[in-house]
Amino acid sequence: MLLRTLAGSSGRWTTRFGLLARVGGGYHIRHGLLALPHLSTAASASTILQSSEKIRWNANSTGWRETGNRRGPEYNLRNCRRANLELILRDYSSNTSNKKLEPKALLQNIVQSPYARLMRVDRPIGSWLLFWPCGWSIALSAPAGCWPDLWMLTLFGAGAFIMRGAGCTINDMWDRDIDGKVARTKSRPLVAGDLSLADAWFFLGAQLGVGLLILLEMNWYSIMLGASSLGLVIIYPLMKRVTHWPQLVLGMTFNWGALLGWSATQGSVLWSACLPLYLAGVCWTIVYDTIYAHQDKVDDALLGIKSTAIRFGDNTKLWLSGFTTAMISGLITSGVVCEQTWPYYSAVGVISAHLAHQIYSLNINNPTDCATKFISNHQVGLILFLGIVLGTVYKGYSRNVSKSDPSSSVSPATSSSSSPPSAGLLLAAAANHHQTVRQPS
Image 1 (cartoon, helix red, strand yellow):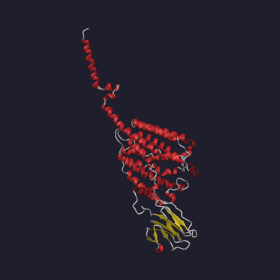
Image 2 (image 1 turned 90 degrees about the vertical axis):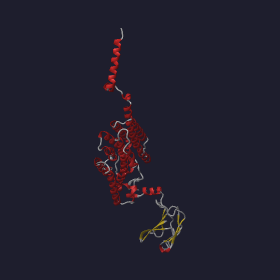
Image 3 (image 1 turned 180 degrees about the vertical axis):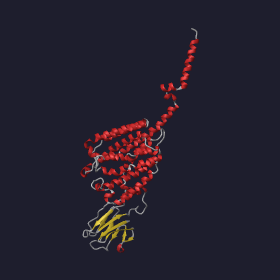
Image 4 (image 1 turned 30 degrees about the vertical axis):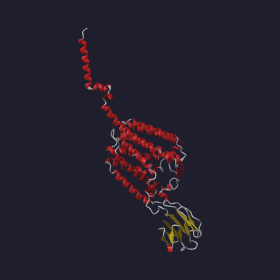
């Protein structure tokens, strides 16, 4: 099929028609031919579709130009004598144009829709980075020898996806005057005009409504705790105009799940375990988002936007090393409080090596390298989550082994306080002494 749009003195109009259909003036359009003799001589054109890839315009034309379209090739044809006349053709005449979209193509169309791009569906790394602190907390709260609560992991996964999207929507609404001036963000839906501000407000309300429904599945303590993070979500986009530490506020926002995950499974927060975990997550966010911010530091400096990337400058690697050390210290503290076992500490060691290599090999002046390093932090979250799960399961196994094998846990304090072994030893000593006395000298 073809989509025809004609712009002239009568305004802009659009119509769809099939391969054999009547066009204005009673003329046919077929797969290979479009004739518009009802227009003026200067504007008359015979447009021949050579294939789905090429068009030739042979009447008073200046040639053809493919403008690109997600749904099919689009051709913009302008007449040299009447600049106000424009003919746009989009080719839908491929073999699959009249068939239902394949699931993969349908998914791609959904992902590329303006609303999906507004909530960054095509960039899931943000949802993962928001989810992992929640997953860590849920896994740490599990009893020894048990797997983490699958229902809670599912709820928090859905919540991370929705609330990350809501955060992106708020960010784009606040920054639409800035995004158009930055090369990486000028194609965002609100800047490009794909969506209006009213559309964004409506969509944000829908996202927050879904997020509230997910939150209501938890206990009241968690509902209040989760709702209290909304203020951070709203003010974060403004921080880049006020302070060089917007990454700190982002860390406080993105790692709220380290507190919320525990309260959702246990009814309250165990601060001695969750607070070190939360602070470790905040330091981790500062590390990866500083790397991310180095992609835009040139544009940000010109626009007066602040970030830790600009604040740290050439000393970025030194700062990131310090925050990584603080992160690892927090993870170790949380592990000690939760009586974690060697799989957990092994995972912490792997994370340390991963971040050390990431910082050492980082090129802060190469946007592509910064983007790659930023995305690799998904592996950090996954490694720690697996370490917590395996460490908790092994903790239960080791306790069961200790209970079933008394000899493996014998200690001086245990043997001195255990009545049966002590009585047995005393009886044996008394019998031996009695036999010794009865022997003739």
